[in-house]
Image (cartoon, rainbow, N blue to C red; front, top):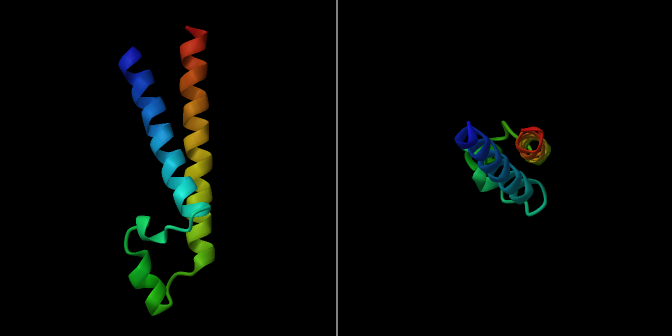
Amino acid sequence: MNFLKIILIIVGVAFTIFGYLIYFKEKYNLINGFEADYKSGRKTESYAKKVGLIELITGIILILIGVWVIIIK
């Protein structure tokens, strides 16, 4: 069970890092196929910002859940 808690926190950290890089540092190349879709006009920068924000929030939530589960037990 401890293994699953550690994996939950690691996944949360990964999501948080990717979300930070996409949302704040504007590294849109981390989104699969974004650059090609951006050049063809199918996706915009606001789409990339939304993806980054969703990943950032999801990562923070996963980290908090992982820490909370460790504290509860």
